[in-house]
Amino acid sequence: MKTNKNRRAGLGLTLMMILTVLILGACSANNTTTATDTRTKVGIVLTEVGLGDRSFNDAAFDGLVQARNEKSIVFDYREPGENAEAAFEEFAEAKFDLVIGLSDAVQADMEKVAAKYPDQQFLMIDSQSELPNIASISFRAEEGSYLAGVIAAMASTEDHVGFIGGMEIPVLRNFEQGFKQGVLAVKPDATVDAVYAGDFGDADLGEQLAAQMIQEKGADVIYVAAGLTGVGALTEIQKLGKYAIGVDTDQFFLAEKAILTSMLKNVDVSIYNAVNTFVQNNHTFPQKEIVEGLAENAVGLTALHNITLSDEQQQTFEDLKAKISSGQIKIKLDQ
Image (cartoon, rainbow, N blue to C red):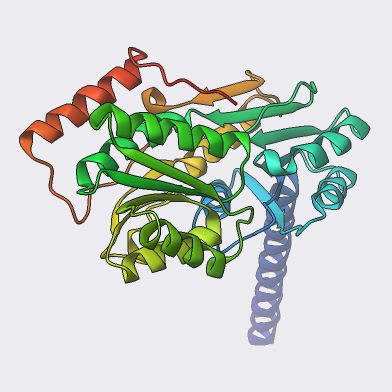
């Protein structure tokens, strides 16, 4: 009889333990859900090309992935094609805490939506807006492009280099002008050709433009800033045995025999930092307009490939870099 009582007591204790575990598990699950639900919600509208450009869009996406992995945010993204306005509207209606847009190519669409949702906070990358609820991150990309021009001039044996841009928009005009001034700082008599594809997503067009610049005009080093169009250009430059400079991310793996260096805009780092600042400041930005360049390590060059600078060239490069970073050299921009 005593044994049966002990068994019943043991069974009761076991059931109580199981029930306790289940309750604690449910509480833990609820806490996890709540924590996820209360994280800052970020939406990003990519450019028309979308993910896979191995450049600007991919870099921006990586910055948000890092913030998400550190559990400071949750995020969603849209590849809008030509309808960026609808993507911005969707995020605004869903009351995302922060909505990000990439480049001035989507600025008009963002501003239309921002005017309709004055309490929604937006962040524009690579452009600025006068609307009070649109903060911005801009890069002095012309400073990194100037250094790209210095390397191009040092590598060129024909004293003839080129620039291929995706679309003729202000930010890429800055790329072109910084590049040209960097070339001429080293070789004042060099020729610098520039062409704009009018498209960031046409690799075949990039191949054609690169071939024309090399075969018809005689360029032997080309700076390429054109998204997927640029990927085609880099492939063709390598095929024709000439040199190239990539952009936004280290593009060496795309054309390992051609790439001299890549001009980095650390979009991933800047977006990561901006998102964390937004979270830590109760969903506000201390500065409406953030502008970063060489001095802030927001732009610069990757390691050099396929070229070895002489001691004199290395010293020239370092001197020019220091003067740009300190503001002693001012790049002239005429937009």
